[in-house]
Each structure stands twice: as structure tokens, then as C-alpha cells.
Image (cartoon, rainbow, N blue to C red):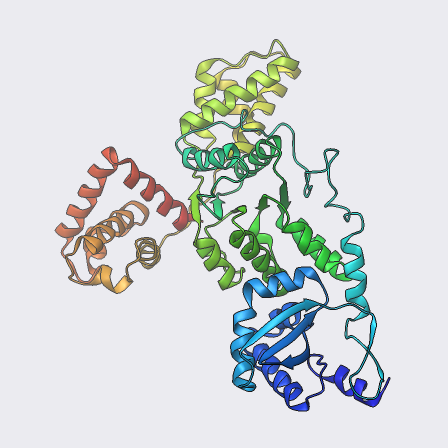
Length: 491
């Protein structure tokens, strides 16, 4: 390699040109961009940009792939122009072209200089036109891109709707019924729920329904996304991975709380931004709301919070009974003599409150006792068969300070507001809710609760408790809020 070539390849960002002043300005500009965006973003998007030349106030930049050119033009071209013009005042705009690995003659002396397209990038460009990697292969119709496997049984027809999941189901139904080219209303759509409450069923059902319309769908667990991304880095097919992933109409990511690693999270953030900017639908599911995903990058949490976030709450008793009836009917198709009286269904729906998987376990236990012993199913038999499913755990000790902190965060007020003498409605209601929960969930007396809330009299606490107790009987929204706060305190 010629000395001039060695110097250029050793630079932080490759540069080609006859004017050392422009090359120096470009190196300063790239150093500033690296400091501004950080190493990960810089290496992903800026590190492979090269300065070819500056003519008539235009800086001609080159990149190794069409995808990189499109992404930089959409997201970073304006910023690059500003930074470069500050380092080289004669530059007032930039252009981007895709460079090739063919040799070209330098303007001085006829030395052969290879355009700085690293071999890895050439291989990536070649692979972009090659067959799609495993896990992203088109289906027989050539349209669908597959990710994690879908369960054919999990459809919208088999998804049971109750008060706790009605809103999430309606949002998913809107996504499923949309047609190609329709405007995207809720993006990203974030659904969060505890284990066993049906969020995976709803996500896979939506994937099936959207696929049936001919749109391109990809359902991925966070673990599968991490595995495929890391595998693409090792195989030097990262650009192919990105291009394939961003060419779909609907991306569904399940169990986002398991997305680990700064680089992986940043790549998912880039993918999310690209899809949202392209008005392509994204659905994300997690076990907590985005604001509570402490292991997830703050910028990613913020972008998710900008969409529609819906919770699928605990299964209410009516919905638990519907689930049991469906499971019992499915079991009866295999065991025609399996008969569960209505009073047993009601009993099981009342005592099994955790999640749908425990309801499945309950049906299996009743079926086993019935078929193995021949004994008819009764409430007494159910009490014996389901004893281990009824959760007899030591209740968590809840502190008044915990109640104040969680209630304040939920209602977007400060703990100091709850303890203050302020009488505005935005503070009075959260304060009354916190007092009510303190009475319900702790063993503290009314005078003690009053002292913990800024030295208030016990009659003030009693008034708050009675007020909220009356409201929850008629106000469904408040009743749901109280139940949510209780679950948050007991988790």
C-alpha cells in the first residue's frame, strides 16, 4: 500500500481527496459526530462514510451500501452538513453516493487507489441479493417473513374478551382489520400484562389475522431478536438483517423486558425508529409498562411511551369462568363423560385468581381425578384436587411510605404534595386514595395514618376512607385503579 494510502486508511474515518485542508476538516467533523452520538451509533452509521472531494461548495461523500445511503439521508444528512460546514465554511451542502470497490486513478500521478470499501462491506452487499438467512425466509407465497414460530391455535376467534382485556383486544382488532396503505393510528402499540393473562395469545392472533390479508408480518420474541442480531454480526450479515427486518408491514416483539445489551437495544431502537418513520405498524408486549422497564435504554422507553400503552389486567371472575368453560368443552371432546357442574365452575373461577395457566391446571386436575378414580366432580372433590393451586402465601408487608410513593407516581404528584395542606382536586383525590389503601393494607390505626400524612386528624383519614369506599362501588375506573395500585404494592 502506498504511504498516502496508509495514512488515509489509518484515519478515524476514511477520506479521499486532493485537498489536505478538506480531509482535516472532515476528520474534525467526524470526531465531533462521534463525541455527539457515541461510539455505537457512530460506528453503525458514520464510520463507513468517506469524503471523496469538495467542489463548488458541495462535499461529495460516499458510503458502501444503498441502505446506508438511504438511512443517512433520512436521519443524519442535515446534521452532517451543519457540522462539516462549521469545520469547512466553504461547504454548504453534501451529496451521498454508493461507492464501488473498483480501483480508480488518483488525480495526481496516476497512482492506483482502491476506494475505501472494506471487504466485509463488499460481502454484505453481495449477501443482500443472496437468499434470505434462516429465520427470515419468505413463505411459499414469497411475501411473509417468519420469525419466532406461531401457534395456529392462537387466533382472534379463540381469544376470550372480558373487561380486563377489552381495550387491548379492540386495538389489536383495529390493526388486524387495517388494509395495506391505511394510515396507522396507534404506533407503536404497547401491551403489557403479568404472566398468563393472554398477551402472547393476542399478539400471535394479530399476526395470523394480518398475515391473512397479504401483508408482511414478523413476530419475534426479544430473545429471538437478540439471537438473530448477534448471529448476523458474527456472520457479517448485519446490514442484510437490518434491511430484511425493515421491509415488513408489521413487526411484533414479545417479552421486551428480556431485551438485554446496550448494542442490541440500540439496534432495536434504530429499527423501531425506521419503522415508525416509515409509518409501518409496530406492536410491543412486556410484563410492565415502558416507564417501568428499568433494564431498557431510556431513549427506547421514551419512544415506546410515545405510542399507545394498554394494560391487560387481572382476569375478572366472569372471564375466568368463560375460560374454564372453553377448556372443559375442549377436554370433553376427548373424554365425553367429563362433566363439570355449574357450581364447580363457579367455585373454581372464584378461588383460582392468578392467571389463565392456573385455570388450565385446574381443569387438568379435575379431569385426572374424574377419570382415574371414577368419582363424580363436586365442589368437595374440587377443594381436594385444587388445594395446591390455591395460593396460600404469606402476604407482603406493605408500608405507608410505599403506598405514598406508588400512589404519588401513579397520579403524577409528589409525595410532598400528599403530605401538604394543598386542597386542589389533583392532590386531594390521590391523598384520599393513599389514606384508603393505608387503612386497607396496613395494620396502622387511623391516628397513626393521620400522623404519617402531615399530622392530620384521624377524622380526616376516616372521611377519606369512607369517601373512596363509596366511590369504588359505582366508579368502575376508580375501582380498577385501586386494584392496580394494590397489585403494584404486592408485587
